[in-house]
Length: 247
Image (cartoon, rainbow, N blue to C red; front, side, top):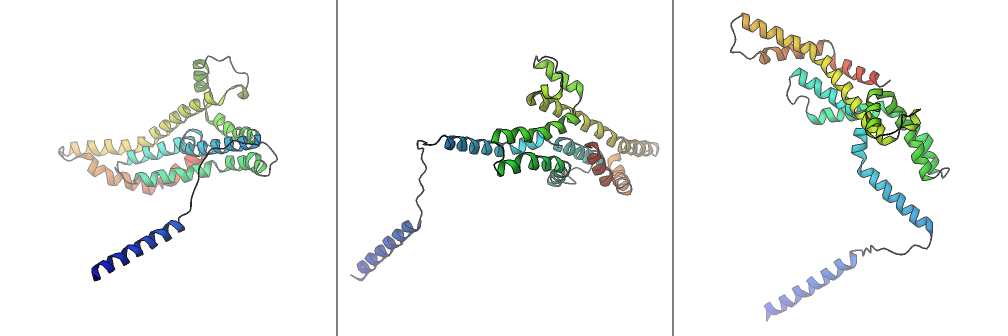
C-alpha cells in the first residue's frame, strides 16, 4: 500500500513538472502569408540579399580584397625559412586578415560614407547603395590589375573593346584581378626565396667540401636562415613591403 502511494505521488510530481515546463516554453510560428503592401516584398528581398552576401563574405574577402596577395606572400616566407609549421597557419591567417583590414580601411571608409550611411538615413535606395559601394572596390581592383589580364578575360567574354573602365563589367574584372594578384604574390615570393636559397647552397657546398655528405644541409642552414631573418627584421620588411605594394 505504501509503495502504491509513493508511485502515485511520483507520477503526480512528474505530471506537474512537465506541465510547468510546457508552460514556460514559448511557442514559435513560422509561416508564409500574403502581403498587402508591395514594400513588404521589397524588404523581404533585401533581407534575402543581405543574408546571401553574409554567407558569401569569406569568398568576397578573398576575391575582392588584398587578402590573396598577403596570405600567399606570408606562406612563401614560411616556406623559404623552412620552419615547417612555425608560425602556424592560424597565426598567418590572422596576420593576413588584420593586414587586409589595414590596407582596405580607406576603401571601407569610402563605402561607409557614400553607400552605408546614406542608405541608413534613407537618403538613397538599396540599388543606389550597391552601386555606390561598388565604385571604391572597382577602383581598388583597377589599380592592381594588369592590362594583359583584363584583355584576356575581355577576349574570353567576346566583348567589344572597352573604351573606359566603366565599360568593363565586374564579372570580367574580378578574375582578372585575381590572376594579377597571384602573379604579384609569386613575384614577391621569388624575391624572398633568393637570400635563403643562397644560404642553403653555401651550407651544402661547405659540408661537401668537409666530407660531411651524410649530414642534411637543412639542419645546419635553418639556424643561419632564422638568424639572418631576425637580424634584418624580416617581418617588418615584409609587412612594410606588402602595405606599400597597394599604394
